[in-house]
Length: 447
Length: 106
Image 1: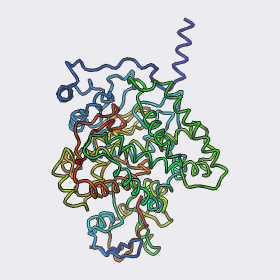
Image 2: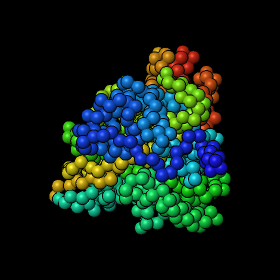
Image 3: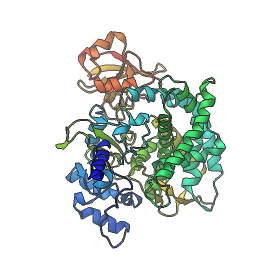
């Protein structure tokens, strides 16, 4: 009896309906195999409420599209309760206009870390990392403004030459005639160099930034990934290293890098350690995973669409428009999540206070009620800038212009050098409903 | 038609006839005026149609909405006379108005 009472009190002290670790086993459909065709056939006819689209299976196999198309058509705002003992259940918002309505209503739909934050799976209640993307105004605004200048138009102009020279260096070092992994040699290489510059981090240790980025978004349940406690330890190690940089820079003249900016701005200079760590994770993931996967995705899409590749080779002036189309088509972050601060109605569905609301950018970017032929990759698409991948409203991607600049320079320099880059096989994808990307993509540049 | 003169940061002028009732972001984008992007399609949700309104026209362009205010608050080149062009509709009273653009849209 006494034990039961104690249990009840523990439960009550946790956020409402929180899940406990380790998570209970995931319910999956009973299928003969996990081939793409089998999974797609299942998603095409399964009862909507039987599918847990947060399952990495659908993302690793790139089969989620079938389900989102059905949701957009049959149930555009839909509650997933399958496996809710793992994620508490969540609302899927799948159409462009509904995602826009949630993204622009930060008064009702909160990003607050202590309510779970901005991803489908709540932040660990015992390891809350406050970061400005997972804050509401007014604190969000002052912290975001502390780092905003690093990606201002003026600052980007000063980076352009550096980005171009590095891009040339990386491209000129690629093997000719031999197969190699584009993700490792190009996508990760370019984004990690950029990230090291932004942080004033030693270039020779740039792959540590990639490692921390991968760890912070990795699923602790998947084999091969660090478990929950190990992951926390790795991130604390990152904090320790960055704290040394902070201590060097806080009393020195501002150096224009992100650590120096955070250390000198009154809005961020007194951040508690976990908040410093949170903002580091945000800026590292934001500047790394996203652009990396658009760099890989672009090459993949051009290979899948030879007509578009030919169009590009014939007119290099299409690069800038293509960059936006790549970012739409890739949607490197599949979703952002909010928590309802009050009961509210969205497209006819009553959302209760405290409910998780998941905005599927990857689905909104394929909404044919707003976009013409959205499932096609069209590099000269009119108004290609109108895509959801950067989000909208006050949390819109702060580094969007830098990302576009990196991709633009990369494609300009690729076209100057290589007649063709051939993708040799289907890429290996990241098993995640959040980071939509590639682990490995083998390619060959003809000798 | 309402004559709007879009002025780039470098001083280049782009006079455009914008249909009455259409917002000034659309007026720019549909006429290929450089410097106004309009990524969100006119929802005051991206601040890529950020512009400055000369003092004599300010009162005629109406008030900023709450969202517009929030978005401009985060724009690093914002000034007291900043507006989002998508939130201003072409009206006869604005005929001849200059819309000034920042060096870059973020």
